[in-house]
Amino acid sequence: MLGLKLPTDPRWVNIVEKNIEEILTDHAYCEQKAASNAISIIVKFPQYPDVVEAMGELVKEEMEHFQMVHREIQKRGMELGRERRDEYIHDLLSYITKGGDDEQQFVERMLFAAMVEARSCERFRLLSEELEDPELRLFYRELMESEARHYMMFLNFATKYAKRINVEQRWKEFLAYEATLMLKYGKKETIHG
Image (cartoon, rainbow, N blue to C red; front, side, top):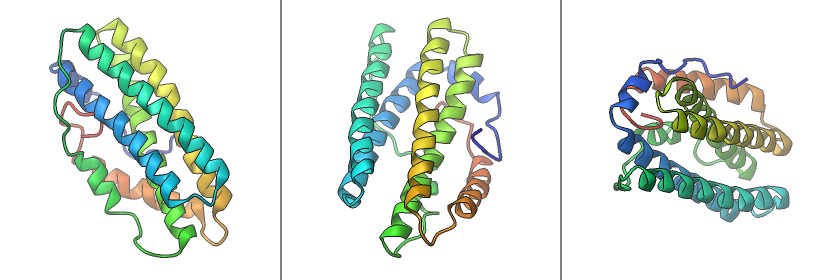
């Protein structure tokens, strides 16, 4: 369903299991950044009322997810660490076509967001199937389903508002580029790294 060209090496879960506090901290900030991204979409593209409405709902949902992760951290007697730079996101952002008209910028932003959600969904699926902790397995299963919905929402908006841009072709290009990125990721206890 996701169309990702290079799956995460299942051994990534072994890295994660060695430092649950680190993955949960990274995950919490990923949720916060997803909310920030939705806010910036509202600011940048107010001409699409349905997008504005959907992003408003997404901000609430992502912040609820942040709180859920924070509660998991506290429940385990751990602390929310400091935010880190997400190299995967940085690399993915560098691929977005700069400039162009509103349509080009909108489609690029929607595909970027869809890609992040797709990879997060894939990682959450792995965690939900492979972690030893049954509570965390269930936790990530529920979040995986949300990521899948978000992924589809962003792709659908890109398709809906693209008049001159071939979204399917551009999505294939995003998928191919993201696969090259994944050759260097999957070696840290981070959601995308």
